[in-house]
Length: 252
Image (tube, rainbow, N blue to C red):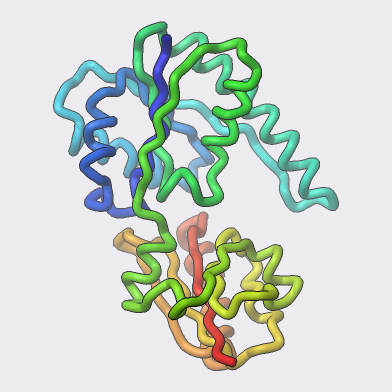
């Protein structure tokens, strides 16, 4: 039977790779690297650097594959995601059938942690449900951007005895989420915090966390929200892509 590893490689710094991840890397025969466009070549370079640094043999091989294009800016976000997901499932089924022989181990290297807003586990779950391809899956957790954000800003993520909500920019654009005063926001291309009524709330923002290009800004939304928006726009234009996240915190 084929075996698959979904390996969390941490948020940007090769030294975030855990000992468990290193063991999984060394057990892998075939790595599947998803290319997401030329602008993100440095993300592929990091994956190759991790393999070069930590794998102690030369028997592995890398299969590069272009990720299906997706257009999530249309009127029906759900349909767009579903279409892209289905094309990804078909692609991965073909890849695993043709590129990973029985009894070998394949791996997907997942930025950050596979559990946070990453489609890898859902695609593999859908493949398993089809029952057309037998494989055994192991998941290796990684250091997420959320953890790095808190560490870089030297602040705890969770309030004292209270909840922490992890959500997306699309949800924050609707208003401050009910039931939580501490909110981690991911996948926000529009700086949705600027739409919130409570502009006195504190924001801890970070981009390219763990990399040499890391950017950190913190303060009240009122005082630094515009700075974050300008900085984000300039950095994305210069680099061609943007990975950022932030923690919102308010006191009643």
